[in-house]
Length: 241
Length: 185
Image (cartoon, rainbow over all chains, first blue to last red; front, side, top):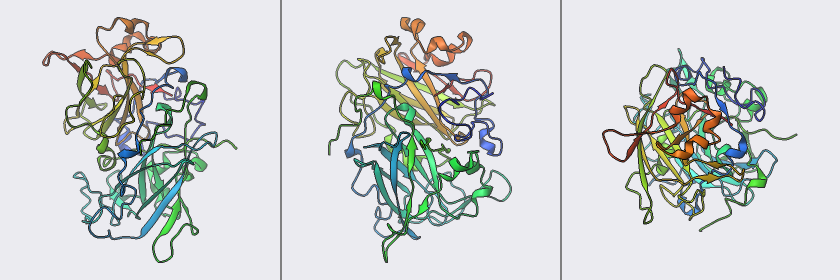
């Protein structure tokens, strides 16, 4: 049913299928009729341009948005955003959101009963630099229970939203942590069938970037679909800093 | 080895924390002469139930058919992008300056439309669709609409809202008989 799904550009198993019954919420929310394949040339010119002034000075530091420090393990999350040909994606808007150290989101629908942290909102944003690099400071989110199946727990993760060169590059994903024993049991993580592709969503512990007496670091690189170069004249070349 | 693009994962139920800052809340201040279009609708699942935790991203051209030609986006809107999340009843509304016809350099004009990305709990990967304008003669020549089976094209064309003059109504049906046409890319 979903065979029409873009197999020529995303190798099999590297993107999740819409209909994935192990993730119960997908069952009634996934299309059943064939997707209509759009030639890329009809899409490539669609792109908003985000200015750097969207980003506040503390937006990348989720530990510094309140009067006090949030509870939890301080961490640095950094990495590179690149296109499939390895070129850096410059001035890419990245938005992140996450649970606090106890596994609770600051959201009215989070009924987990875990405690809120008055010093943690759990949202951040930044833009990549000229080499496609980004850095966030935050605390390590806790795993949390959910109702997908009996004794279901989400492994610790940070949600990432990214804009690249155009509409084809748009990506929302989740970053996981190395060595998390919950990953093999998580249907959302395992919705990416290809093991290598799945494991690329697991960040790497980075001793070199860890800061003595301050924070451990994790590195997480992200690859976005590129745009057709011949049709593009630097849509992200404008700064208004 | 050529790296492949990173895998998609659902926005989950709590995306408002991170993404709602770009939802346009107040009346937009567009330039003089802009023709403002308001669109209301609902996101529905395979049983016709409202989807209260969906986010639409609306990507569109300006009146001249250009993308991102103006100033870079500095706040909750630009001429070419907006977000709308659904309420408890699955309802959403967004407003935009009516886009012009688009020439992507393929030599074929595309009828005025907005591209809509749909994110929600339950969607492991976002969906891509389009909303076209009712009564627009160039819809008949649009190269994308022509790729869509004729009996399903109607799901991509908004209706005049009978309750509110000048406003449009357009629903996103994720599954079922009235399923909206979604695109693979």
